[in-house]
Amino acid sequence: MGLAAGYDAWIISVGNELLIGSVVNSNMAWLGRRLTYLGFRVRGGLVVPDVVEDIAWAFRTAAERGARVVVSTGGLGPTFDDKTAEGLARAMGVPLRLNREALEMIREKYGEKGLPLTEHRVKMAMLPEGSTPIPNPVGTAPGVQARLLNSLVFLLPGVPSEMKAMFEGYVEPLLRKVGPKLYFVERRLTSRGLPESEAAPLIDEVLRRHPKVYVKSHPRGAELGVPILVLHITASGPSEEEARREVESAVKELARMLASKGAAVSVNP
Amino acid sequence: MGLAAGYDAWIISVGNELLIGSVVNSNMAWLGRRLTYLGFRVRGGLVVPDVVEDIAWAFRTAAERGARVVVSTGGLGPTFDDKTAEGLARAMGVPLRLNREALEMIREKYGEKGLPLTEHRVKMAMLPEGSTPIPNPVGTAPGVQARLLNSLVFLLPGVPSEMKAMFEGYVEPLLRKVGPKLYFVERRLTSRGLPESEAAPLIDEVLRRHPKVYVKSHPRGAELGVPILVLHITASGPSEEEARREVESAVKELARMLASKGAAVSVNP
Image (cartoon, rainbow over all chains, first blue to last red; front, top):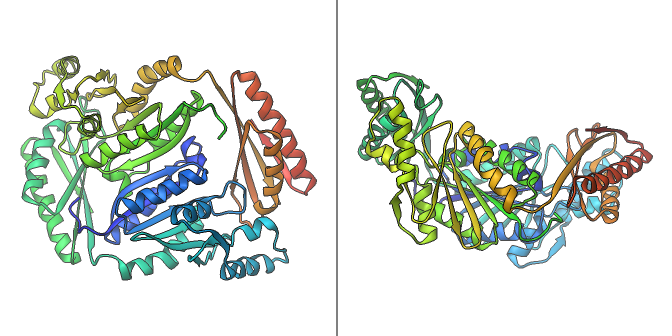
């Protein structure tokens, strides 16, 4: 995908509901997009059940395969099957400890409503030793920031509104400091009337001439009926201007080549 | 998740578009649901980019972690970035070979439209040595059936209509023969007015009494506003009747316990 090495990101999604298919994993797509725009190369996504060993395996795998950043969603709430902190602790080889700061966050949230700290609520303050709680401005379960090998690890809740608020309010500002100084630019181009198999050699040629550009083709119509291809053209560069120049040049060339083969081409912003 | 061992399934999703978040992975949810209903325990989901080594790693990982069945989607088309067959071949330690049967399928599809076999179209007939093509009734790229360690591996296209038609027409009938003779039953229960942290100990108790039942709670309202919990209650058993009996008993007990704590409970079919 042509980005600087050393800035791989991995996304871990925890939850049986994702594996039995009762929930579609929109969190992974949302995080993938945000991490890509921050200049990271999202190298892998792991979906694991609510099982401590499987969660630990996922964190170890991402860290051992060279992740600079690992973001997980799910498994941080008060119920018996919220096991992400325990899984991370096992991957780190440390015990879970009651984190005072996290407990204070939880106590405040429930205290405002006159609700006491029960065993299940206190559980949400049990973090891997040496980790830091992340404030949850929307819900009650704090997130967790930790380090595993060379990876910066962030545990976020699975509820999308909480996950997004915590990513934007805490994770993203931090990643802008430690992440690559890269900018990501994209365009879309729609081609009508040319089968994907005929567009393929044209795309190959454009890619050979633009090594920093990535083109992904998405067939939308029937390959043998009226073929519609949506081409997603992306580039990352050290400046937005440079990335944009690369993308624009590739888009122009692609549009010209596709049109010369009889396709009706439109370029979307 | 309480199912018979030896029937783990893994799902592999190939495609940069899933990692950069330009597409939400609905294929994984669809396959997860179908595999679960067939009695498999979906143990893991791996999302990898269009990179041969990463794809090979994913297949090796699933096989080494004990998958009985591995289903992948994506990366089977005619373009340069369709690398799933090559990734599987590398994981199997075999070369890609032109498969006569696959070539015939492709020749027929394009021939009907008077289109010749180009290099990019022939590429779709290059399968890992020793594997079998799967007919594609909707599109042009054949699927692939292969064996890796103890895993039965199926490569399906990423286009949902093609993937679903090939799963239903080919993979599912085959899995009904080799899969566990297990039935999967589910119910949903909605609880209003009780925070998840207060429902948690009740769920724990029901699970202790029903070891074959799985309860997953999904908070829908605000934990501190008007909390709404959707409880998804599932069980698998050697007969549908037995699975249903387990689920019904757990649902009844849960509804009673939640109501006794002041929740408004409704049971959905």
